Length: 83
Image (cartoon, rainbow, N blue to C red):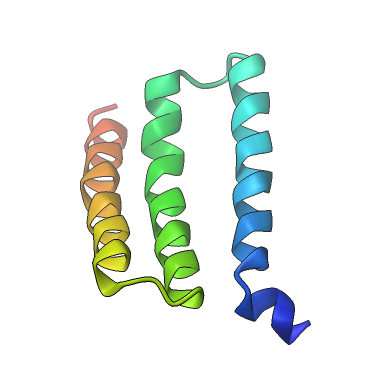
């Protein structure tokens, strides 16, 4: 089981589940593509950063994924608070 997590397959599984969830939400028209980006984007970016760290990627890729999550999170907050 430790190999499953150390090899980043756990992150891949989580990303696949999130993709299925996003597809269902889009298919049932419960969320717009823009809303989907704002809701799922920060989490996906953080998971990609975790995956990069687990596989030993260069620190720049990890920092890029983490940095990308912040503006998406702020946009989501602005959208939610403006309602």
